[in-house]
Image (cartoon, rainbow, N blue to C red):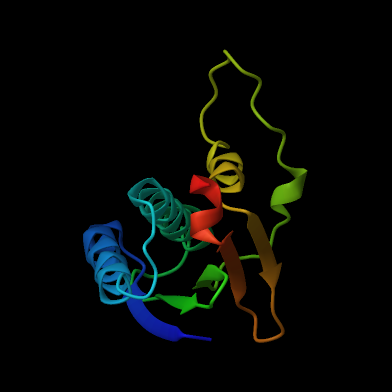
Length: 145
């Protein structure tokens, strides 16, 4: 692992800008070693924002705003990993039905957006009664070749 960083924030959408600025700073700090295409950085920032928003709106909807959302970033030679930890009830996002093109529905798009932005997306319940959303993007440069 080249670099890792951790952030814990309240379960409140008003801190989304703080989360995004933290991610942008992480990317800027490491840009000398990895020349990431800007569109890939934006895609991962969007994935982070979607994952954080889902944790606040859905996983923590019945929990107090002081409930923490933990975010971990890990940069490896071949990938960037984002982990978003929540304390909501477990659920299986693979059971969500993908919206059909051209149809409108309320909600349900986030999981499918995440899967299009990243190379790997998992949502798992851990023994400590926390859920972890793992978002992985492999070899940023590979997309530009």
